[in-house]
Length: 282
Image (cartoon, rainbow, N blue to C red; front, top):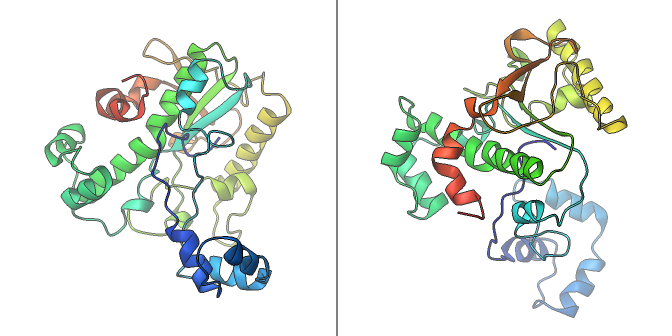
């Protein structure tokens, strides 16, 4: 639902994180039954201390084609997914958090894309931006916005009813946790869960929290109806305004939180470049 959609990728399995975790909690046996038996004896407190500590590594889903599939986009297009309503989208600045401290575009591209993407291509795609802002836009588009564009378009094309697509754009002063944060990755969560800072939140942020909770609750209770007034079912392309821009221009009430826009107003970099990496048909 939040922050884009799973891309159709088949990463090479890596056991580095698991091996590091095993060593950290004292299970240094070779991989196999002995190590597993050791791990089963490790206390919950020890595991929590490691996973909440500074040396913990990320555990990401592993493609097994049973619970996690390598080709979710293709499965949507070929009718191999549940035909249920869904809501998908991203924040306006999903990439800003991941670009903090990154100032070398060439090094970032080499590390991320292994030479498949060039600096000149990115300067042409995102003209006038410095290297940090360019990296931020790349992360937003490649990781979040473009997968959401592809998934929602595929679902509509497959005849799945009641697809709702959004982009979340409000910027609140008390949520600017780092330079250039803006509407950053996960900044919508305090509003959805009501966990915003009550001592620093302005009235508009409090109101938006109630509004976002209402939108989500409406969708959960009856996903065949619009989550908010003026939120149309998604239709890809440039002929309709069905992409919901949420809470832009200070609009935080349920009656005005949705600003319908053409999807191609945001999807230009996807259609011009990133879909060639993400779309299984290309």
